[in-house]
Amino acid sequence: MDSLTKEVTHLFEAKQRRRLALAGLSFPEKIRRVVQLQKIAAPLWRQRGLNPRVWLIDRK
Amino acid sequence: MEKTLQVLNQLEAEGVFSRYAIGGAIGATFYTEPFLSFDLDIFVVLPTTYGGLLTLAPIYEALRARGYTEQAECILVEEIPVQFLPAYNALLEEALAEAVTTTYEQTPARVLRAEHLVAVAVQTGRPKDRERVRLLREQAPLDIPRLEAILLRHGLGEKFKQWIA
Image 1 (cartoon, each protein chain N blue to C red):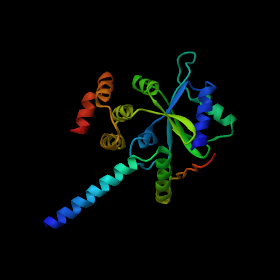
Image 2: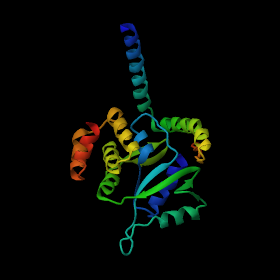
Image 3: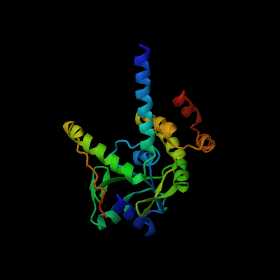
Image 4: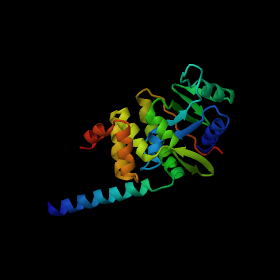
């Protein structure tokens, strides 16, 4: 049980480190990640009858 | 995104609004890990109109004249749905006045301070605002004395304490 708890604690710590690393990305890189999330979420939203628009962020 | 911000900068330079800043989820994402949003919330200080009426009509007219179209409560600016929100109270006026300037790739942009994003979320009070406050407290480099002063000034201290209890 103790080893399982250690393993889970280790996983949560790694997860937290990753989230903080993401928080430290540049703003443009974060926006690229937001768009990745939009691409994942958009089909699910459409199934619910919503019409989200995935951003085109690379227009210059 | 960069092109969208360039259009916002042009509108500000032309006086369509006197100041803008990114808020909402994307404003929060400036300080935290990225999270899902489909809208770009832009807070604006509008020029004073005769009779003191706050109206977004001049912004919409300026954008329509550039060929941009409306989609529900947003307007598509370079393929990004932008929702304009006027600074309708003292907290938002202050938040816009003190917003920070950054650059997005090569383009200047303004973002609300993290402390103001927390205060605005507390004031708005929806479940997703509560989650945003949690995330900002966990990940944003908050200036706590500044945050406390803002919350006190706008009567949000008690609500904030309840939220974080």
